[in-house]
Length: 375
Image 1 (tube, rainbow, N blue to C red):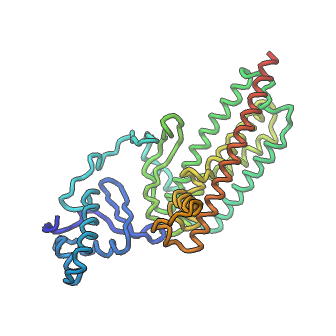
Image 2 (tube, rainbow, N blue to C red):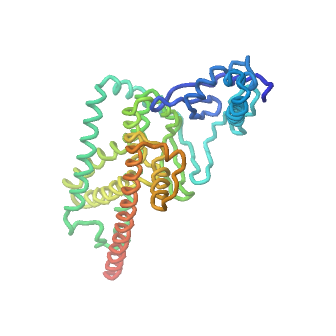
Image 3 (cartoon, one colour):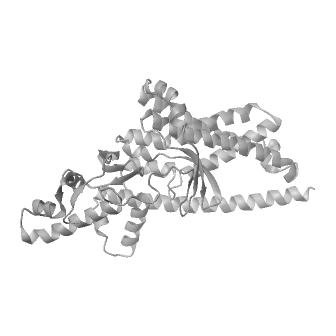
């Protein structure tokens, strides 16, 4: 492509997004491409009047010694743009422009339920935009923390005689209670995703779709497509977007604790089981080893990229006394400390979660065995 003039396809947008990062947006594929600032500057010359040779000559200032190195760098960049279908004359990806309801991936096939959520949420988003944002975020955070605390206190302190987890009515008798709680929890998950969508709407980066995915092809999880959140430049906005779902979960948990504390009979039992589901959901959402809301919020708060991968690569290199890869060797002391602390926290989380799971399985086995023995 050295003799061909270079020009970005019509409609391609170059913008600054998260943390002032330069991005290329392709409206045909709906994909964002992260680029360096030097690449951003170079793209200003992709106006259809220059070829690769012209760019090499300009950037090397006709220095033949530098020209070969510059040519390699420019050629690699042009090849990447061409492969991504961003240049005039580039071949577009086979699925470009398709809006299929079924989206396949190696670990999480997705089914789109609706793309109308932005239109539904915009009236509410207009009201939220009119409120003082910092105060609103503080109120939601306090309500969420209070809700989760109330949930823990209620679940731990409830009357053991009325506990649905004792299975006093046997497995068959307890099944409707657990099933009813599961139905309500699924509605709470929908509210969780709508909270993400509402914050995205307030930030003027509407979600693209609401749907559900099959994690590892067997675990159904709801999701909203927040791809356009890359456009949110402020760290506070991205943090609010990441934590919106957990915030809604905390408020729902507080309401559930209120019901469990004041109701009796079947309603109380359903509420107690629902609290267990909600608190398990919280533990999942702060899992530091998966791309959960908590993990994303931690990356945003620390201003670090690829927190999980870089942390364990850094710790592994330090433990084996190996030379650090260039991208880690360039890190400052504060960034290295952050990555090491994250690795320690993630490792501790795994140990505690595994121990809790094993203890829970043992307790559940004894409870089920006792319930079957009563029959």
